[in-house]
Image: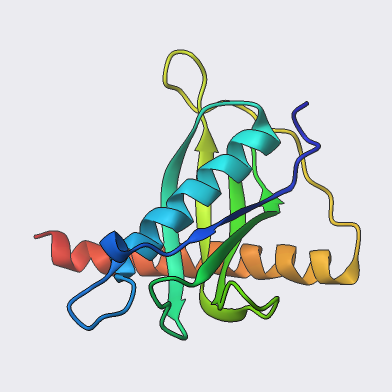
Length: 158
């Protein structure tokens, strides 16, 4: 039911096909996992097909090794009229241990779409805890910052 599934965690093993020239998991593979988890979370919250509008603030903190168990956690932290801000945390570790270390984190903005490919309304998410409120407030600050960055980036479109 829309408006009830706020978070999603994908768990899988990092495979040899994910490796880069340095022997670690390729950043592009991590970005794909982020997009998949953001979609699953947004679709679960909205009950609709969703598209990626933005992914930003991506920080690669620690490399992921082939054979690591990877957990990609996606959570709604803000909803607009048709958009959802999703916090993404990527953790990984030895599958024989329960310990996972933060490897990558970012924010994704997903937009719900109707049958005609137009933005569609999403259920409102209301923060319940102090942490929820801090994350919502952070999403609002990031929205304002993205507008400034978008305006500045027009310089490069010439």
